[in-house]
Image (cartoon, rainbow, N blue to C red):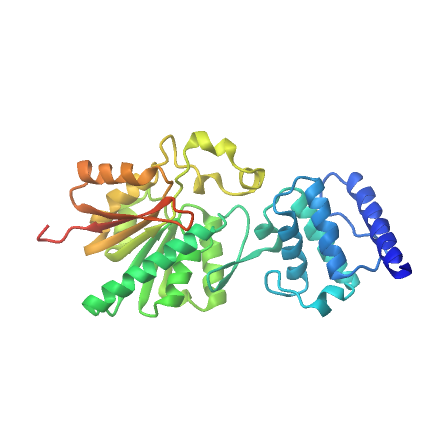
Length: 336
């Protein structure tokens, strides 16, 4: 009983110290309580509670990700021994530094400066768009589709164009999975281009990747010159309707690049030029794979049928939540 009482007294002292520090610091990193022993488990609980009090989304996961990152562990898998270990002074300072950043509503991916995408660990940096789970589904869909196509045609070399590469998640994941693939990746953000190259170099995939600072809306001729032809085009373009932008979480609005999210009044401002380029860039029967808003597939299908005779709308696929999320198109062959 005395040990349990001592434990709760310690937690109370730590929490009171933290509250005082937070109340006195509006901006910047918050220093940890001086001369305070705290275990990883106690730190997780303490920060999760404080994130909750401040309305931070996913408070427990945020706390776990931060502390596991500081301890050099993957995601949130702790051993019981590690949970009970007392944080070193440096570890405690680092936890408080990163926890303070999360309190500003900075997404945890930016806080810890890394994130896992399928089997890759990628560096993350604001304001480059953070890859979502739906985009992992897009990559899985493409890999499954390509396996069927390659099995039928015995294709050896493949060329791909990604529009809007961001951190490089899609391109690098495809390169890791398909040894004979070469990827051309575009982004209108210099920060994104640099981050994609940084991640490619870290993963040893830079030799089969060409990254260009190009805008699909403004630089169509340059894209055709540098990237033509390709066997397939893949993109997770900006597809949110402008009117829906203001409903996004503070974490997204305050830190992520709006140009990677806002698709204009109808959400198609970037998708239209992608479609227009596809019929010129793709090899015969080459394909387009798009991640879109659930309202878009029937609109895109109608757009293709009425205005783009060179393309064929193949199908719509749903994501894991059963929402129509992915469009698959194909360039028509010479026989139509």
